[in-house]
Length: 317
Image 1 (cartoon, rainbow, N blue to C red):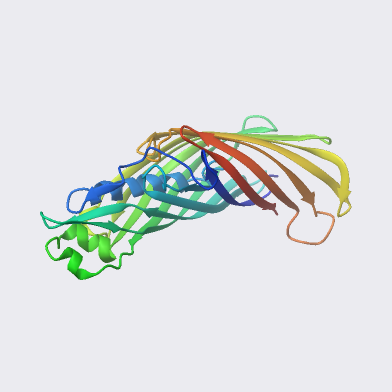
Image 2 (cartoon, rainbow, N blue to C red; image 1 turned 90 degrees about the horizontal axis):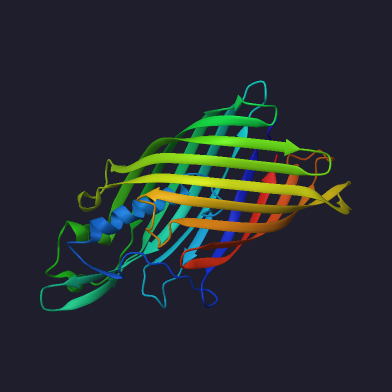
């Protein structure tokens, strides 16, 4: 029986200097009235990074101070589990938050003023699947995914800056919103090879989710994006020789790789991310508590133009 797993990750992506990361994203400045929709479509593409549980993108922070690219940060909380071998219904869910800080230019034709904006995105994704066993340890899992999210623009500047540029794009920047939903599915190959002295978990996953705006979205920024992703995740667990809570303390080795297609590819300057991690796991199953295992991880994450370190925390039930 696969136990439910809840995972949470706090991460920092770093580049050449501590606290900074670089990605070749969209240009820093856009002209109000022509490019706001393009940026909003980019936000929908960024939202696709949190559409599925993924170690490599569970938290990203791209600070553009040196390169001039818009600032971006996101974090994700989620998990998944199969109810039992006799009733192999698979359920998963994620909650995600991201922040995107592009800079626009307000112009009346003669004078230009930079306008920093702050776009906050919240989204949740659920998945329902079914395990079809191939062997006792290997199963294939089709999953139906649904997502809903909202992008809110929060801009507070003096109205005199915009005396001659009052249009639909500006209205969105001042106090607009973009509502989005996503529908699609995933196909996962799951291997659980457990022995007395070690445990191996391996997952291959392909995901395709179509995301588009709906309902009360501001007219200037209605759009769509496609989340297409292939990922590989593997974990090795084995006793360290130490004991705590009347159970062995395990060391954990982990690796993950994610490749992005469609609008997700290149929107933050990379098409794939790789992570390698190491951690420790405490087993509390001997005691009458709901949490059976607690795991702390340190991961090194890298891709084209970005690299850094993440710190993760997870529990099993």
